[in-house]
Image (cartoon, rainbow, N blue to C red):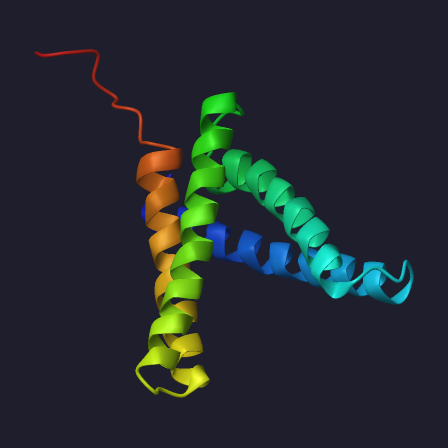
Amino acid sequence: MSLILSARRFVLTGALATLVHSAITIALVELAHLHPSAANGLAYLAANIMSYVINTRWSFQSHYSFATWLRFILVSFLAGSLTVAIAWFVDWTGGHYLVGLGIIVTVVPMMSFLAHRYFTYPPVSSSAGPP
C-alpha cells in the first residue's frame, strides 16, 4: 500500500477515534454521571482499541497479533507523552497554549503515523533473500 493512501486512512481512522472518544465521554458524563476523568479514561481505552482494530487491517493492511498490539500501545503512550511534553514546554517558555496546540496537532499525528508505519507495522520485505 502506498504511503499516501496509508496516511489518508490513518487520518480518517484518527478522526473516527476522536468522534468515538467524544461520544463515549459525553454519554458517560451526562447519562451515567461518571466523573469526567473516569469517563475520558474509559473513552480513550475504547477509542484506542477501535483505532488498533481499524488501523491494523485498513490503514496498514496487517494482521492482529499480541506483538503489534503491544507496539501500538507503546506508540500511543509515547504520542500522549509527547503531547503533554509539548504543552508543558510551551507553557514553561511563556508561550500561548494555542501555539502548543498548533505544534501538537501538526507534529504528533505525523510522528505517530511514521512510528506505526515503521515500528508497529514494519514493511515486509518482498525479497526472499540475497540474489
